[in-house]
Image (cartoon, rainbow, N blue to C red; front, side, top):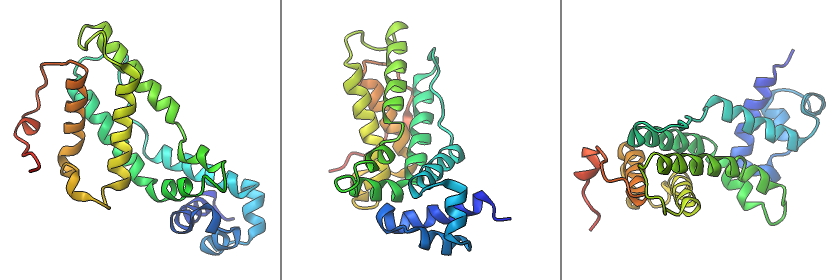
Length: 202
């Protein structure tokens, strides 16, 4: 019996290489060593198969949760940013193909932006918790700050390979992004020696 996981792994490889448009069921079936009938019997449609691929990738790299009551914002946010960077990098090829096909296939937007609103609200809730505890400025622009952090994560995860010199070193990026974000929110006491010593780009 052909395993569902085997088909998902094959589909993930084909999607990453060809995008949704180029990832025909024939190519996926060939990669998985099965016939197309088996694909449709197992997943119903190509769209459903792509969704299953993304769900599997999400489960393989579970998101680090931000606490409802912050204790150590620097550590908590650094871990969250690092986790998010790794998760987006993992599905980067599929995201790039999906975003490139949005105009001709509007449903690709759902795949490319999966969970975007949920993650946005996660960060907003964390900022409000910081404000409630007096750890962040009460007048900080919550939504704009969340958009900036998510935009930074997406930019690094997707575009680092194009212009690597503009991004912080991989082993410093998460901490430095978290530090800048927290300072923007008004946190003054941030223990981050590596960030304080980080060289600036001339």
